[in-house]
Image (cartoon, rainbow, N blue to C red; front, side):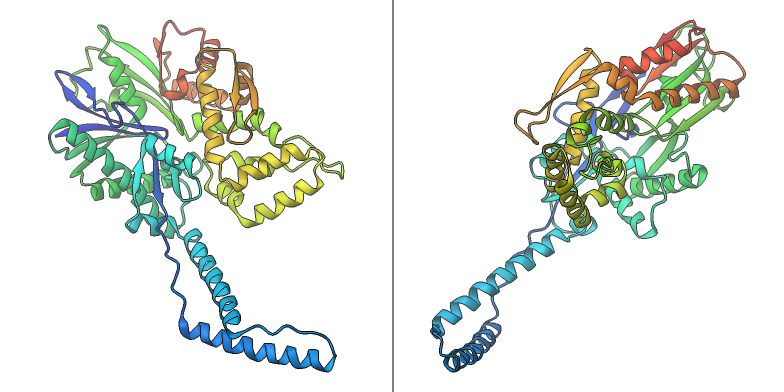
Length: 467
């Protein structure tokens, strides 16, 4: 059985072709879309039993040391309390127990993600993964939007990790969809962006496609084909047409944005090969997740110390706040979670003029709450789709902390991304060397009125516009 598979940056979906139209399969609690997230708990590390020989050695050493201290006290004519052998044993026993408990904790904390994936630890997906991570962010590993990194400069020893993560996610969706469909799904068409990484272009594209091919095979799919995501959107739009059109497609997703100009309509619908109808294609790794980060920096981080001063009169470095919110940057998150960051935040708090705000940043670090804060920013963006202003609660930081966020804040935060969208659209039109009849806007990011209004203001010449 064939299926169309949208492995998105933010969400995934899979659909079958039934009765001359695509039908999406419910993937999680009846929902047609599942967040592109994975959580795996760390393996429990049992505290070791106390080595009796080591205990005896320590008691013997303590007795020798006590005898020396007693003799020294006698010569100096001062009092000294001798502990019994049982007391010395109890003290040594307690010390050993604490050392072993700390060793167990260190081993637990230092487990790698790949170790957890290959152990017998539970792996969960989607909204369930998000809820588990938010409940206890320090007891496991949370992966969000791995597609964002597939075209990046991944070190060789990390490639296998990405293959394993993608394999687990694809295999989960395959298993769930086959149960719902009642049949094996052996062949899939995977959507792909024009460019996975705009800085590495074809090198990044080749790497990303290689990871996806390996992961799909490991997940059990026998045949995999790829289709540009904006072309897939255009073909979906084509099903609604009763006459031929030239369409400019903007597919603004969570991590990538792609554009194409393509001829669609009844005259082209039955063609197997459509390459000659594709007049222009552009794409860049920019999307809704970037806007979430920018919105958090603009509206949330000022309440965590951004823009405030040290007692030297200098501002607190912005890098601290970028690392805190940049959940789509592996290196930034590693820096923010590090012990070095803990020391830097302690030093910053000691010198800060607005200590309460900086203490919130310290709490964010200690609680490993970056993903939760990013989720808050994403929800703010979503709620601003149908209202001009919201009060965003951050009760996981402080019970009464509410932050006002406006639609104008969102527009200002997304200014660069909005201009990138328009630039990609214009480049696709330039390649096509013809004006489209219609703009077709799709993707989760495009649902925001901030995006659609900006596009309408920039393309007044277009005769029609649809989402």
